[in-house]
Image (cartoon, rainbow, N blue to C red):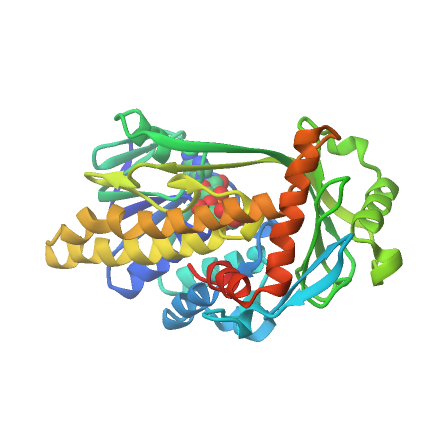
Length: 386
Ligand code: APR
């Protein structure tokens, strides 16, 4: 096997790996990123797009925010619809709330790749890591990299997580019992803000991305085949659940992508040990109800960069030893809120007594949010904080 050497080998060029790579280069730590897919595939994948103020601060302080400052859109409120009506929650004005920056993740990834390369970093695209062992990673093509530390930023099905669980590190896991059809359309947003619609047919969500691209979500049964959802069916269902007859426009456009997925969450009991440390989805997957995934990835990359700098530049591993305790309480708070939000957005299916009871609780929670300052402050702090 041909091997190269680095201080840190990072597996995966998603938000976690790319932010970590740039932060390490800023601190003079040499690293190499191995990414199994092509550059075009990594830069073209539409995913999240909702950046919390903390994420924007980390990116700004590290010279990674030029694109999002120029093209990102500021969101300070979100909107709820149900058969009780419509209301807007100005979370940036409530309690500890702050604004979000909406910037499509593929644009952020494009900026991060460009900036990492500009700083002299090395990324090998098309390099799928087969195995991580103490101080070395082996790539499928027979090459390898030896490094003092490995950062597993390779998502929730990656080899980083598998290497840790095979050492006995356990996972806490939750299935929210809910699935979403995620639809990306070439149409301007239909509302000013993020929109959450509660409906007895299921949840519908509206997320502005850019002036010409919008993301919608429709709660759908488990096992839904996106092929069963024609464009007409999608628009008809969105119109019903978003109550556009009553509340106004639904801007149509070609459907660019549609995919169904189950809402699941999990957290590894430790995001690393010894010479292998994880960040992002590798360390834990969070359901998208509160759009925390990319923000947790950036937070963990920031904490891990600092800890790795301590170890590599100053020979001090206390930061690494503390990394789990630094991460986990924040990760769990994000999960707790995401879980709460999932309960707000999804009522139980069916018409039996239990389902009716559950739906009334859902509406009571929404009503608290509409009328109670305390509930609004709770929402604002948790929705925007990380
Ligand atoms: N070898 C090399 N690369 C790999 C391997 C492997 N064996 N396995 C996975 N990868 C790559 C994937 O191709 C992907 O580009 O790791 C990267 C992981 O990136 P993401 O899945 O984007 O994960 P992460 O960086 O943790 O970002 C997480 O961003 O999209 C949002 O909300 C979403 O929560 C998610 C967050």
